Length: 252
Image (cartoon, rainbow, N blue to C red):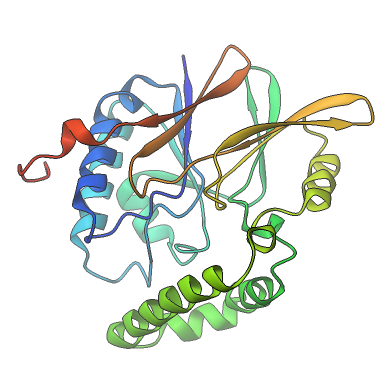
């Protein structure tokens, strides 16, 4: 059976056709899979499990149904949804994994990450990440009224867009030495991650040994999925959203 990997869906009420595409993917291909791994940024923003959100409700229902069908779903936090907590994970029947995380697929050790920690040249982002991932910062943020959290998230997204446009691609991409370091530390022949929105399969020579870094694509305009089967992780392809571009209401 095939193991599926996706990331950077950035699901949001402003793009309901992508949410429909995701739900259809879950109910068709994912329902036939061995397991589904979501490597972060499932949502465009997440300000706490206590918020009411129709998109999050649709996603939770679809993933809970996947669980009923016997397909496990695993989730690694991204930079947009690092506040997603146990309450929502239980609703969606997702198992939360640490970042990084080593799993075994078909007898092979594979390293999974969201990928943002590999972008070590982006010093301002890494400083914010270090601060926002402390328990004290997160407790303080989640204690704010929902309206304040929402305003903070909107401002952060706007600033992120401006910053990304102002710096070069090299700053926001992974640092090659960071990749080598983490793969050596975990002793793995393959790394799968998202975050950069630059889907590709990179083959790297480590002292005469070839290893792979697979970068997942985003879901802004279409879907993107990695299919891992028979020790092959090269099946990285897009999912055309056009069949689901209809006026029908999303299924509950």
